[in-house]
Length: 316
Image (cartoon, rainbow, N blue to C red):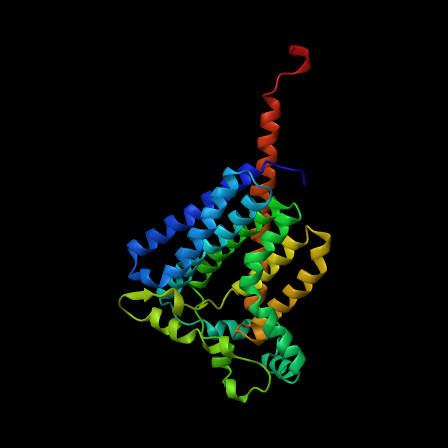
């Protein structure tokens, strides 16, 4: 990839965030979903501080800081629209798709009981997968900053853009695949597990059922949960983070291993079917390709166009 114009990349990411909020307001206008504004106070304060630092760093033309805080702002800003997309998808209340997803796993030859038994029998493996699962938000926040520090601002912008696209596509697909998940369908109680913390296998169910009920639903940020099953956004983000980190030699192996574990943990610790992980990774690959086209080829075309406007030596 060639070095490209960073202003185009930053502007593209800004328009992506704006588009996400436009879609959020449209959903609020046409659905019976509401947002409890009081619950977003802390997020608003954090975002305001980040934007103030971003504005100052940009004004002072500081090295690295504008790109780093721009990425932070874009990730924090994603919280509301991305959550609303997922809740709007499940709010449509289509029939549960667990039986279909179980059949897909069976067709792939995946034995969920055997896998869970193997992980649960190893305290070390169960702990490692739990830690990998919990790295989701930390990676979204800090991997773009690491990329900026290594001089890969374009990759950082592309990763966040791909995350927005991933969440949008996953939300649309999940309209037809609302699911209770593996722990519920296979009848495994959290208390029966020795080493796996199955909190996230059950944590989302209250919100999942509530948003599917008739009547208005008020989304509170402090009570929200990841309620999508198919495809797995966790696995998709794992693939995107591994892809983004691959651009820096020193980050490839640690982030590659971490994100293989995070994708696997979606099955062991988060109620996902194996096919959810496959679908999440496949969508992430598509989003990475789209991001590469938008943030590299389009910028290359812009640079070529700019060069074409320069006077040729023969004309001077």
